[in-house]
Length: 75
Length: 375
Image (tube, rainbow over all chains, first blue to last red; front, side, top):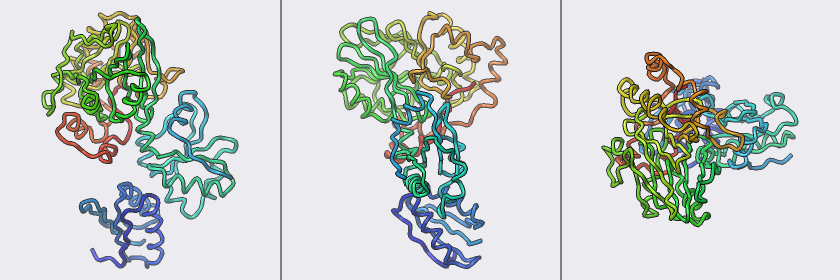
């Protein structure tokens, strides 16, 4: 999936991955995609719930060895 | 205003004393719905931390004035952030040190009684998950029953009591939590006892504990008499300690009974469960104090935090022991069962020694409440 921006949140503990995602998202236009890499397992549920409550779309997520990858489309 | 850390031990005290506490849980909604800190007089507000990133103003009027406030999250980080914001807004709040991760691992030792020859029996209440384990102490020796994976707590406790752990027993192969039995037995050179019918697939050596088998500890020969009581698992074994305490494992709880579906088919074992509860237990003295391996709801705790009740009282009060009609009983324990515990198959395989997940993974597997009972 094509991303307009990639955010490296690896090694960061909660709440930092979400705080950084929120910031990065603010710089995107509606319809653009942010790709996020995180290692905090809690990010999975939290990012999904955050995206939903903010009207964004969690378009895709993958797990590659220990890295969780998310693609969120700005709403 | 200031904000400070509150430890799991301090929160446990509030649960035991039925104190008031306002719990602001900032985990996401599904995690909160699945599992939370339970207290008889606790009030709750669940707002995910990611909805508070721009400020806490909107929730201030939902937090009652003059009440102690505890902010809770999964691992502490987000609760510190929210506690700091609330403190900046003028509130006096605490956050749960280590979050639900540490809450899940906290064990509170409670003395449940003395033995005839001067020994003592302690119950370790895993307050966050409802698991109960036991240490029988007598003359410098100790037996440990249904130990959790927080092995250091038992090792340190035994040391503080100047006792050497000589026997480690599990009432059955657990499906809701990872047993610390094997690790403790290895570290202390104690004998590890397991019911052989539950241990058919284990990858390590153990002593087979069969019905009628006795284990003694201490010079005064405290008797641990085992009693075959299948139903929750095919091997489930109860222990009568010092002819006074009935360690019922996951067969009989205070306000519920064991579920038969976690290691096989409920249909197959429901008859065993019925037999154990309605025949085997009926033949025991009603004066025995039942000490189960779990509690399901916080109401099952006594005033001092212990979970214990006379068998005779349970014959009167426990609904699961009072179902005359076998078909009704069958229906209760096979239909409308609560969801199965998180990762229960992986937990069983870990307890068999088939897989060896690291500590972080073990923590993750055990997340959530125990669900070994039916009511």
